[in-house]
Image 1 (cartoon, one colour):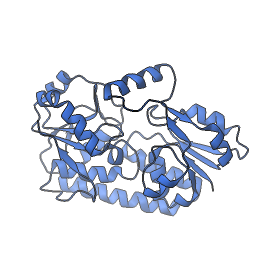
Image 2: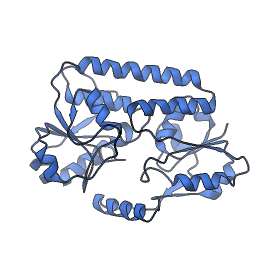
Image 3: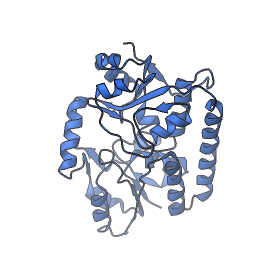
Image 4: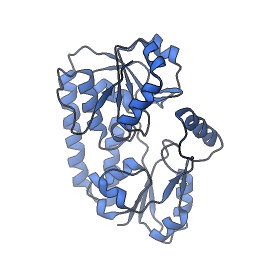
Length: 298
């Protein structure tokens, strides 16, 4: 089977199911696992390089209102690849090319590829996507193992933290302007033994203002700008240290959102374990290998 993945989380899920050898092209943002970086790219970023966080936010809002994506699809390359399956999403216009554009191009390809859209809102739906892909690719046993392993790890975290004090958590998906993290992240915070004071499980992320965040008196702020790694998140936090200090939280940490939070793929379980370590280091002593939380000095 020839598969094209048009969203990084789907690429991760396909490789986790043992389908890496069937993936013939990915997006320009598909950087995990390492083998995905070597595959042909069929998308590019429309936004110019070097924009600030506020400029990115303004550009995304403008293009979204105009019904435009921030990614451009190489339709000719996609046709020449002649895929049997295209995996995309319609959940977030910031995260992938337009779903309708993909469907329109797929209808013109001789192989008439099946188009699957993965649009999870919760942790359970993220794991459900493994089963969806497995049904389309005959990898049911691999999906069953992946889901069982993820469920066992989630249960271990919930059991470890169930009797602990629940710190009040503000998870910020963007800083300029501030956005609360939504969809599966509030659920991850709950499973990790915290209380999300900004977001609601399964709901979209929403713009907030700094006064609103301060009024909710969080104990900890977790900076997780969508698509950024921990180092860039830490730098963004330092650039907004005055606003973060005014929130009054006892601790501010920056994490790798691209790897563990903003992509609804297998590594959100690593993100859950990292959250549990941040919130309850006495109960969850070791974060997953490679996962870090960088303290922000205010």
